[in-house]
Length: 407
Ligand code: SF4
Ligand code: SF4
Image (tube, rainbow, N blue to C red; front, side, top):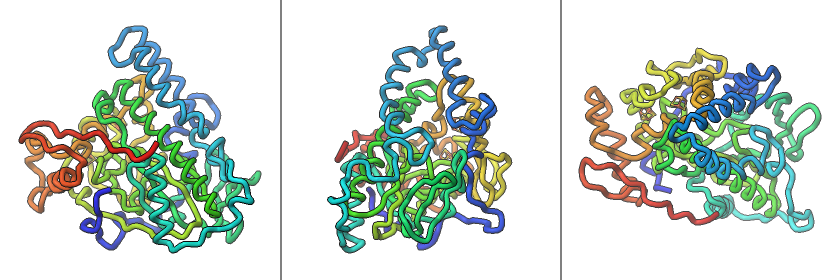
């Protein structure tokens, strides 16, 4: 990871209107809302039916980027994602809240080390299991879902993480979140909204499934509790912001200094004593105020071109946080009509690839430039630390192959 000290501002990078904010229930997510409308019962993946039918139609019509070979590559990339955890369901399959294979007699002894040593060990293990970035956040209970499809998440004064008939129980001692980010394939993303961009997403999910399951088991083998999560249980983006991995962009996604938004996120909740990281600010909010690329290139009109607000226009957004709200249903219904998920907002965001001179041609009105352009300074840091290759003036930035340390 690039050093972050210069980006620390000593406070949170978001504002919450406490009187309006409430923990968010999974049932209000766009995925659940559209799926439930489509199939008439509460469901997470029902929206896929329409999407797959349109994919099949485009396949038959011979649309480039929607071939059976494109789909085959996607299916392979998605295999581990779908095997390791039931998508969107906490405590399912390998995402179990109990140890998978660690025998109790091998983990009864809790390894006692300083929080600094544990933090170093956890981040090394995360990299070994395939994470490209890892940070530690103090678990802010406001980011934990109020309930999943049917049951609430409750915080207990003591005990172990478990599921009863009535609720998911998280002990208050589990007050740390290890948040991991996984770089997706940049070349495939540029094909959005065609199927290859979905494949970049699918592989990101499979890689994060391996890492979250593996890191949770590592922590349990050291004698501590761990809850491995993908998109379930808690909101990944605010936790990633708290863990100092990046900032929230206009498109509703995390922007990291190293890879822009071209990452997927997962997290492990734990009671292991870990040193929390600090939030960072590298100028994203000001830049997004002036840049509208993602809003202009969004085929569904889901991205706001207005000022930030604390009120979501749709029930799928959770009012109370000052930000640009996404119209999740618009986005998902476009995926259905398109026959594949879309990633235009990631593909066009200049932080995904770094500074290119033509961005500035579009940004004559940019006020951020007057105060020092965050995109240019971030590109400079990415080059300095090997996250972008030096390319001749006015040519497209190159992302070098990632030097993965693990799986
Ligand atoms: S994924 Fe596509 S449709 Fe959805 S918000 Fe991004 S650009 Fe818009
Ligand atoms: S495309 Fe521009 S406005 Fe959208 S998230 Fe990226 S920097 Fe912000």
